[in-house]
Amino acid sequence: MTRPRLGIIIASTRPGRVGLPVGEWVHHRAVEHGGFEAELLDLAEIALPFFDEPKHPRLGQYLHDHTKAWSATVAAQDAFVIVTPEYNHGFNAPLKNAIDYLWAEWQHKPVGFVAYGGVAAGTRAIQMLKPVLAVLKMIPMVESVPIPFVGQLVDADGQLQATDALDRAAATMLDELVRWEAALRPLRG
Image (spheres, one colour):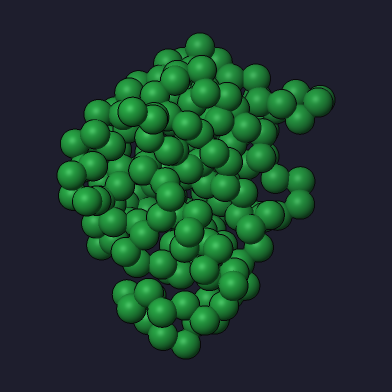
């Protein structure tokens, strides 16, 4: 049997973002973990326009090629990790837009979180994401990786220098994603 697929969504799209090195670190951790075939899904590269489909996503009748491509990408994943900044006590607009494009493609998939920011470490963004994802029938993991003062962990080469505590938290989250992905697999048919 092939390993399940893990989509690591980098939510930040702004120039100079730390989301890219954080997402690359998560991808590296997931590859080392070995429980998934991991794929980076960078919303800056995917570049979805503001939601522009004429029909409700629940119908799955997509008009635009960018929606069809995003649908295929999300549908192909068995689990997700969302790498999100915290903006004004919440998550960012490009992430909400990417979520809102689809409906069925998200269902019955577990989702973990790697959030970053200042003193609150992105935890408020995670808390705001949970009810949004729950209505899509996703299962948010309790185990997450909040990264406080993330800017202090990015070196001159733009690489995240994760602490042992962050590496352990990522391993724990990935372990739970493996367990939940297997449990939810029958629901995805």
